[in-house]
Length: 454
Image (cartoon, rainbow, N blue to C red; front, side, top):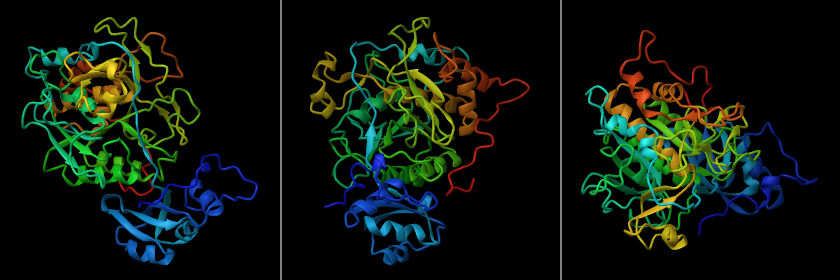
């Protein structure tokens, strides 16, 4: 049986008998748990100070068991009694200790059965461009979707084009028993034979990296395992972008988060990382969860396009879309994209989402409507694939700059919500004909995660 998470109620961190040491490199939730339930076994993520450190020596000193290692960010998962986290925190070879918390897939339901997002972000202009320099459909670009799996036999995905890998410890197949991952993948690269349902980059290749069990449950270590796979296989499959429409369940500074270290490692190795902002609205901690809180990646909020493809005067920010300032002082999201009333690929009628929301399945039984920043992020990921097909030399920082500098204001946008709507056509035009100043780069002056050496 796997160990539980940190002590329930630790998020409040309120007890007159509990002392939290802000100088100790141990997450506050674990410090709390160590004092309230010291004998409780938990899984923790340990960040090492150097790749040369043998995590088995670290574990032995605290009576812990090594469960898994993630070399690309010099981290490991340990099972340990909560009381031992203080010893881990004082180990000179340990950079930070955080809980292996649950992962949450962002999605809520809505009502309407139509697809307008591709034209809304002007992806259709790129598909149908008469100039070879700006025409693109994502051909030759591979995108990894780190999620609940992928139904590669779905009619929206031509036979043999898509790939799925199972990296869970609880499932034996790559099948998407939940449905979230297949829906996300369809927004990026669906190519339905009838032409009725097309992703933003319909000729891109998607690799479904399954990190959740068939009920959609996962932990941070599962996400790290998926991101390690992407890192290890980036050259083999020409993976140029990754979509993450989920977040960890424990708030943490991007500087110490293992998941944020992982996405930065991908970013610095040429993979553009696009993540969902979350569906917490304007809550105080709305943008405090990895990987959406990382300043390097492209964090995407949700826009309601009112199901009108080219009429922008009725667009508005989705009320549930997370926005605000991270615990490290960065405004998020970076962009918004259509994410409400999105119809996309349904894994199967037996999938968890289909069973939960039967009224939201389409008449053909292979499509479904969902809303959330989970659906907005892949709109941007598909746009990234279009840009990379035509200008494959683009770096993640250049792509982020292109998308932000060419974004479109939406009605009612306020200074408190500075992220504009992704606008694929002018971004492509600038990428191909950048002008005398060239293509600039975003993220100038950022300080990376404390385990990353850019």
